[in-house]
Amino acid sequence: MQLHKRDVVDAATALLDNYGIADLSMRRLARELAVSPGALYWHFANKQELLGAVADRILAPVTDVTGDWRVRVTGMCGQLRDALLSHTDGAELVSASFAAGQSEEMSRLVERLREAATEAGVAPEHAELAGRTVVYYVLGFTADEQSRLQWDAAGARVAQPVWTDDAGARFAFGLGLLVDGIAAHSRTGA
Amino acid sequence: MQLHKRDVVDAATALLDNYGIADLSMRRLARELAVSPGALYWHFANKQELLGAVADRILAPVTDVTGDWRVRVTGMCGQLRDALLSHTDGAELVSASFAAGQSEEMSRLVERLREAATEAGVAPEHAELAGRTVVYYVLGFTADEQSRLQWDAAGARVAQPVWTDDAGARFAFGLGLLVDGIAAHSRTGA
DNA sequence: ACCTGAACACCGTTCAAGT
DNA sequence: ACCTGAACACCGTTCAAGT
Image (cartoon, rainbow over all chains, first blue to last red):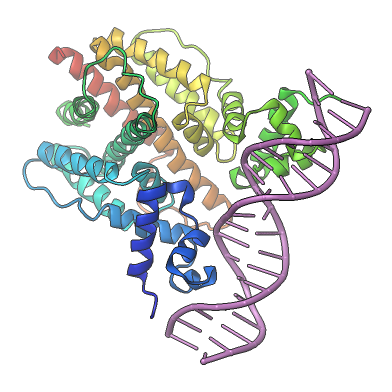
């Protein structure tokens, strides 16, 4: 029975969902697939590349959005957050893969955000940074949210203190700061 | 000769600067200090806590800034970026410690940014998120910048392509988006 | 109080050799 | 072409025992 990239990414995703990123090791993955650790290196150059493939699997549900630039930005970011929250340690894994430049899906997303920023009136030489800044926010916010969620779920119910504000509304607020900033910048005229 | 926390953090910082975060292991650090690995666990509960202490050492030069809220935000963020760029993999290490909630200095910084956002007119229940959002940007941007810098420095001179724009100006532009967003939000009135 | 020695239970990666 | 077996060079953490 031949081992295919798809099988490896499937098993890696299952390992991630069930045990978290700390237990997603090449050796454990090989054991799960009943192959020797070295077999994985026929299909992937190294662990980073494998994690990049898992990141792209997680990001598959993030689709294109149509509408004006505000709708597209908030739509894509909402889908990104949802995708990250759908897998244990999803935000952490995708953040790492993005930083390592191993996720094609993240590159595509930054490109679409760059287009939206351009449409909003951001100068071409700054549009990609505007897109990346939005991504930094979504990854940072969601990694934070997810670590708190997972810590709470692991027994330590503390009943959060002051803000009754739900996470979705807080997410939208922070994103709104960036969207307003992009809009303000284009009005000001570079 | 007794081992003190200070000596351990000193040696860890030296290891980081000279060899990078991948070589900053408990065992290697113990070897450098000529003690057994177990000795470190008398002074630090685990590796995360030790890395948090290194993060706070890196962040020591980030001081208070006086002036109106815009001056304070841009001043603190500039100092933060400078501090991160002063140590090999500084942005990556501080990001990890911040995410793990192990850096007191980062908590202090978020608190000061929260105050600045409040002064700018952001509602109290959203002011901390505004501060965190600024931090997500600085950490994301600088980690990116530093990984490119270090990759370039490691021989692979490619002579960057299109934008003659220096990193400092790009950093300021992205930060400006957030500052404009905060300002726009307070004018809009929550 | 502070540290050693040794163990436990792992890692990622490589590569000759097999089929 | 694809995989095994075994090795290489490591990890973080614990804990009885020593001083």
